[in-house]
Length: 423
Image 1 (cartoon, rainbow, N blue to C red):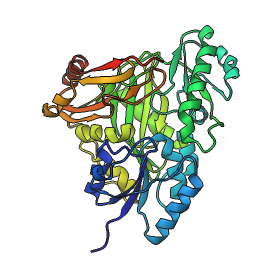
Image 2 (image 1 turned 90 degrees about the horizontal axis):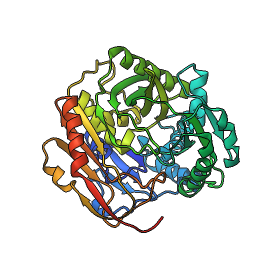
Image 3 (image 1 turned 30 degrees about the horizontal axis):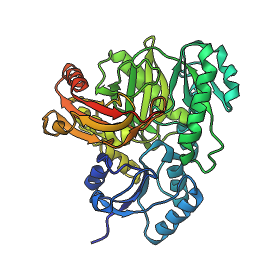
Image 4 (image 1 turned 180 degrees about the vertical axis):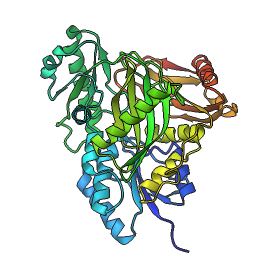
C-alpha cells in the first residue's frame, strides 16, 4: 500500500479541529509546523498528524524553507497550507520554492499588507474608503485631512489587534503612537527584521453592517460559498463577537457583494486559495475592509460553510492546495440551514480566575463545537491589545431568528471572572 500524501500545515492551532478533521476526510497526512506561541503536547496531537516539525519561519525563513526543501526532496509533500495570517507569505514562498500549488508570493504579500490592498482596490475602481499609509508615527498629520471618525490599524496586523477608532483629529496623534508601540511589541515575533515595521493605515470609518464572506479560488475562478452577518460593530476597538449565516440580505445587495469580492481577488492576484473577506455595507454599498488568503477563524468558517451549504469547505481548501479540482466546482450553491458563530467576548482584562457557562454547552443539541482557548490562569491584556478569543461556539439552527436568540442567550450565560494584575 502506497503511503498517503503529506500536507505541510503551518501554524495551525491544535485546539481548533476543523482542518485536521478535513485532512482525514481527504486522505492526507499532516506534517505540522507548530505556532511559536503554542506548546504542543505530542500525546494530544490529532491522529492525522504524523510529524511535528518546529521551524523558525519568521526569524529564519530561509533556513526553514531549506529544511522543507530537503525533506521534500527525500519524500515529496503534496501541498502546504497556512493556518494563520502571518504565515501566508512564508507558505507562498515555500510553495514556489518546492513547486507546490498555492498563492503567488506577490498575492500573499498583498494579502498581508493593508496598504497594498487599499492601493489595489482603488486602482481597480472598487469601493474603498479614503485612507493614508504612514511609515512613522510622526506622520500622523498626513491623516488629518481625512473625514473623521477614522480607524487606525496595523498594516500587517491580524484579528482585531490594534484596530482603533478615532473620533477627532485631537485624538489622532495619541492613538497612532499607542498603536505603533503595540505593534513593536506584538508583531516583532512575526518578522525577520522586527525593527522594520510595515507601518499603519488610517482610513475613514465606514458606518453600516459588517459582512464576512468565505470564498474558494481555483485556477483564477472564484466561488463565493457563504455570506455572513457580523452585526454593526461601532468601536472603538472592534472586538469580534460572532456572526450569523447566511446573512439576510436583498438579492441585489448579495449579488453586488459577490461581484466586489470576485473583483478583489483579481485585483490582489489571488488565484488558488480559500479566502476570508470582511466588508462593510456603507450607504448600501459593499466596501472591502480586508481579505485573508486562508480559512477564516483558524478553520472555524469551515463549519459555517458546511452547515449553510453542505460544502466541505476545509476539505475543498486542501484539495485546491494539493492541486486537485474542488468537488463543489461548477455546482449550484444552495442554502440548507443556518449557522451561528459566537465568539466569547473577553469582557474585561486581567488574570482569568473562572470561566462560566461554556462546559455545559457540550450537552446542548444546538451546539456543534464549543472550543475553548483561554482558561483560568491565562492573562488577558486590555484592548486595543489583543490576547486571543476565549472560545468559539458553533451552532446550527432552523432560522436566522433562532440563531440571534441563541446568541442573546449566550450573552447571558457565559462570563469570565478576572483578578486585577494592573496594566
